[in-house]
Length: 92
Ligand code: FES
Image (cartoon, rainbow, N blue to C red; front, side):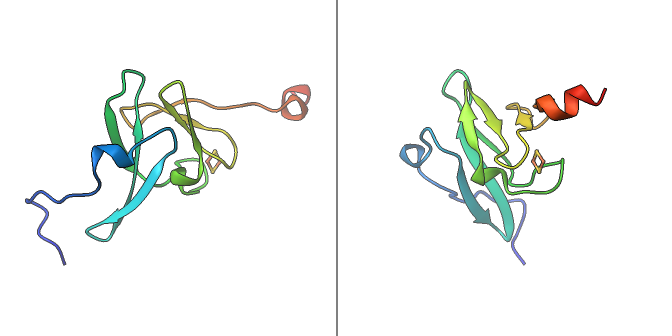
């Protein structure tokens, strides 16, 4: 158990570069990345689509893109776009 009303060091600013950085803080998986203005962002390291670790994805123009199916997460922790494959689009 960890006190939740305290500050913990998760990483240094220099560790957050062009790739997502996954860390476990107080037993919870967190992913850090740089947003569109270079701000540090921390989100749950869990994709809301199928639960893949977002830290295994990539950062594109300040958005965190899941490496599994391409869900795009914004800095607020909300899904903002999802890739649709040509195969799936042709079934519509
Ligand atoms: S698990 Fe992340 S997009 Fe599907």
